[in-house]
Image (cartoon, rainbow, N blue to C red; front, side):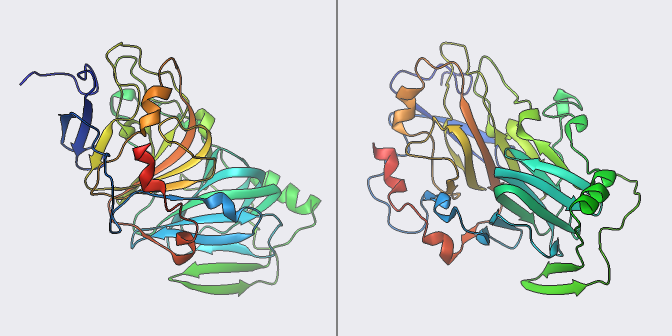
Amino acid sequence: MKKRQPHKNIPKDQFEEEQGQGGFYGPVSHLIRKQPSTRWTHIEGNLKPRLFDLPKMQGKECWEKLLYNDFLNIYLYRCEKPPQTAFRSGDGDILFFCHEGEGVLLTEYGLLNYFAGQYILIPKCFTHVFIPKKPSGFFVVESLQSHFREPDRGLLGRHGLYSSSSLMRPDLKALHNYLKEQNLEFKKVAVFRQNEVTHFTYSDCIFDVTEWQGDLFPYALDMKDIMPVMSHRVHLPPSVHTTFMTNDFIICSFLPRPLEQDEDALKIPFYHQNTDYDEVLFYHKGDFFSRDNLRAGMMSLHPAGFPHGPHPKAIQAIKGKTHTNEWAVMLDSKHPLKWTENLSSLEVKSYWKSWQS
């Protein structure tokens, strides 16, 4: 059997498929097929690719659960007006990705300005409140069994991917100036714990911290401050784009980058069976060249157990291009994800057929 570098020198008119374990971190094999492994003509049953048209929720204030299991919850959060109550999750850390809008986030540790394209990490049980300056929408991931942490940089060094200096810390002075200027007081906190809400009422404003020190605090990370790992010679697996990790799932950021330059290099995502992980993609903005008929704000779910990869049109569309121009958030879950009834109503039922075109 001829040995070849994966994702390079694929025989003409044939297709490579990667079968791997551990969310691209474990052992893998690469198969060369005569035809794409996504050439199904019919799917009967629940194990199929799904696309959800989340933008249909635009214009509605909501905190809507989308996907879930015992280890994480995924929500869509939209806000247009400042709430009267602050919030706290007693269940886990919450990672907000701002898809649209801008405003300020008030925390006990200080004020953070937020804007589209930014991650905001709120540790478990930290009180916070979003005050939008423009109508805002967030893709939200709550970790229920472990805390978010930064990925291991390994050979990249401590400043690989993104530097700790890129993390935006809350400003305590700015918080108190803002509360005074806006004549705001938050005396109520809604605490979410195990599908119940408990309301705490105080006699004065809860944001009364005068100073703090330590290495546990809310922070923000702008997608633009993430440096994609690249190889000019060969297509790299999605794991190199890991932004946050937990014990049960990972978060990756797909950003604009140059395409591979070697003539024999694969320039589109390879067909793969990620046998252990359910894959969720939230499409933020740009040109999603590996998918067809997508628009910003949509979300796809590719459950473990079936092969998937680029749409046929992507193979033709990539010719002549030198760079990608997509901004997206990927979540890979070790444990199968369930979806809510409300999310089912937003499903694009014909999505599984899109590989046939």
